[in-house]
Image 1 (cartoon, one colour):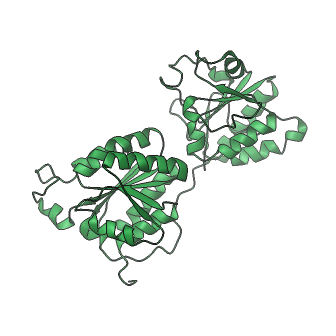
Image 2: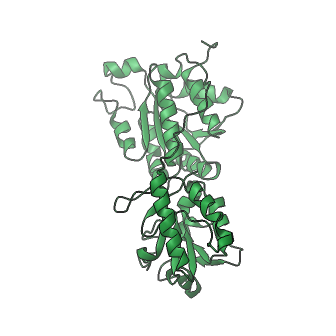
Image 3: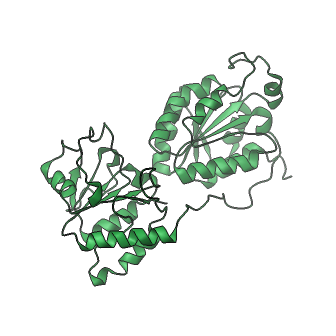
Length: 352
C-alpha cells in the first residue's frame, strides 16, 4: 500500500486524468469523507452549489467546454435532485460522471432503515433510475472499485454520455494503489472492409456530383471532429450550414457558411445549399422537433451520413473516418473533392 492512499484518491486521480479539475455538488453526510479528499487535492477543486440540480447543470456546462465533468451528491435525496440534469446530459451526449456518496456496505447489506432511503431495505432503487439516463453504472465495493471506476469512466469518455458511480462511505476510505497505467479507453471498432466499401461508394457519388453541401450538428463537437469537418469544408470550399443545436461547430464568418438550417423555415440561401445539393455531407446530424419541426427535405439517396455509430436500419458504420479521409485527400490532385468519410444512404462513424 502507498501510505493512506484510498479508493477515493484513485477515483480523483482518474478524474484528473480525463481533464476534470473541478467537481460540482452539494455536501451530504454520506459524501463528506470523500469530499475531504477533494478539498485536499492539489489539482482538483471543489465547487459547492445551492442545490444538486444546479450542480448537475454546472457539471454539464463544464463538460461541454472541458470534455468531461464530475458531480458529487449524497445518496437518495441528493442524486434524485440531480437526475434531471443527468438525463439532459445523456440526451445531448455530455460525459458527466455522477458520484453518489452512499451508506456503508454493512448498513446496506443489513437492510438498515436509514435516512434518505425509502425505508424498505432496498438500496438499489435510485441506481435503477439512473441506469435509464447513464451509459455505464457501478455500485463500488472494496473488491471491484478499481476495475469499475476505470470501466465507467472509459465508457463515458468513449460514448460521450454520463456515467454513474455509487461510493459507499467505507469503500471511499478503503486502501488502494495509485494507477500505474493510463485509463484504458477502448479504441472504437472499425472494419477495413466496410471502410473500403464506404470510400468507394462515396467516391462514386462525388464523381457524379456537380454541387456539394455540408450540414453539421452537435455530435460533430461531442465526438471531437470539428477540426476534420473544418478541413473538409476548406478542401472543397463546400457551402455549409449547421442546425441550431450545432451552433459553433462551423466557422460562421467563412464565406462558405450559409446559415442555420431549420427545415422549411430556413433562409432560401440555406435551403438551396442543403436541400438542392447533388450530394449532401451530413455530419453528426440529429433531426428533431426543436431544430426542423421535421419539415426538412433531405434525400437519403443523395446523402453521405456520418454518425458516431451505425443506426439499426442502415448498413453497419465504421467508427473512425481518419483512414478514409487520408486516402481521399491523397487523390485531390486527381480531381477528387475533399475528404470522404461516409457512404450514400448509410452512417459512417465519428471518433475522437
